[in-house]
Length: 511
Image (tube, rainbow, N blue to C red):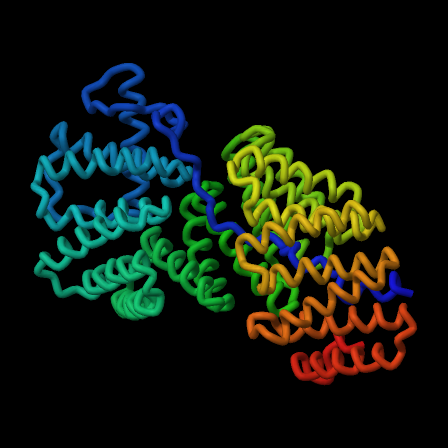
């Protein structure tokens, strides 16, 4: 009987589903050969042989950057002397690398171009605003917000130094201000600037170029952070249409497919309405596997998102297939002891747990715990406690009560050291302990455990009503198993009243 009732408080509450990642950049490196696949270190307009090929490649990229509106044509374009040619070539090289997601290499090339232009025309030349703005966008993508804000402010200063009254100029100022607010996490003010800029651009017939796509992508990102998934998806779709038409199967296009897919996936999970999220994520994966090798971190991130999407939709079999692919890929790229391998092992273990494959789940959770303990000197950390909680839950489901009880006591001990004895995380562990004691037929110990929980719950506002209700229910089960029928009825009735107050009359949890 006790075993049949145990499901009320045996839910694996702490096995939270993994979240979507927005970290979709190339890994940085200390040398050109690491972070730039083109292998170009220096550009010389007067070079011959291989050096000439490098220059021609960079100048072709520069022509595309101008053609596709990634940067504006300089108003005071100088005669192409060696310095100006080199500056343009480095700009083109930065653009080519940015399109491939090689952000460290792109930043290096753009900074060289800026230095050459500043040496040629001075730091205060208004034409330099565009390059300052572009460098800011790269730094922002690299999560280097403070440095990005410096370059956006430089761009804004140069823009305002121009004596121009055109709508496009006004829109550029608004966009730059929007980027400054964005790196400051002032989302509402950033969106306000971008919306005003779009209105100005619309009235000025601004071309739908790559710079416009950058603004739409940024708006999509900000709106997604506000959980405004409809408008976010529309912005991403606009950016995708522009980038795909001009860049084809490039990293930037894959990046946009990924962000659109993640936004639609979030919308799908929230509203339970099917979208095209999977197809967008799979298209991003296809491009990355064409652009890069089969095993690459970009593909691993996309595969992770596909795993999360299926996990949140309850398709644990499909999710486990994706998480297995991700785990194998990360082990091949980063080694078996990397922190990211520990994270995906936990995700995969959760899928196995929810599929009833408890033995496999234990193996994955143990591997995750092994890595965490290898990398973290603190063997009493909350991360260790959480992993022990998951392993204990698997043993509990396998009716291996002795092993489960031992690990839940370890969880309780570690959490008490961090949160104190009268805290919700400790109560969660105690509920599991009392429940297992019921399963083992140790009704007296279980009754003591549930009474201890109730003593904490009644005295502390930090313990939520559902935990108190579960403890009352557990106490009722212990009393019923001890044939204390009147006491059991009182405990069950009190549990029901707590849940009615917390959940309302129509919640399935009352059944």
